[in-house]
Length: 123
Image (tube, rainbow, N blue to C red; front, side, top):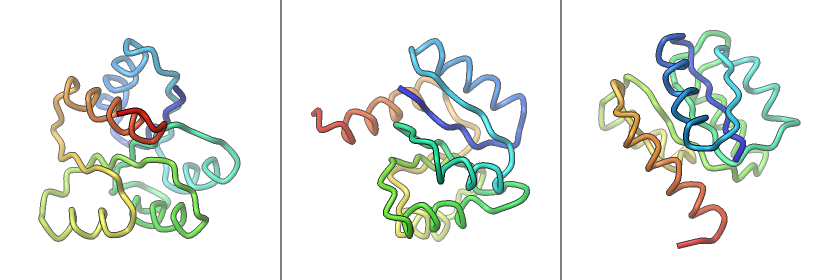
C-alpha cells in the first residue's frame, strides 16, 4: 500500500519509513506542509500519516483541505499535541485516528493496518 508520511522531524521520519517498508508498504516522505498539500491534489494514497506542526502549512489546514475536496483517504494524525481539545478538533475535522508522540512503532503499524483494512471494506 502507498502511504504518505508528512513529518518534519528527520530521525522520526526515517524510523517510521523503515517500519512501513518492513511492513510491506511503499511510503513517501514529505517534510513540508505546503508540498504535502500540493502532492495530495494529484497523488492517491491508501493512508496519510500527518504531523500537525509543520513548516509551510499546518497539518490541520491540510486535513481541512483534504476533506473539503471530498478526499476520503484515511488520515492518522501523529503529533506532539496531546491536549483533549487538539484531539477532538482533529477528529472533528476529519482525522480517522490520532496518536501522540513519542509513538511506539508497533502500535503505529497496527493502527495503519486497521485504517487501511477498514477503508478497503475488510473487517
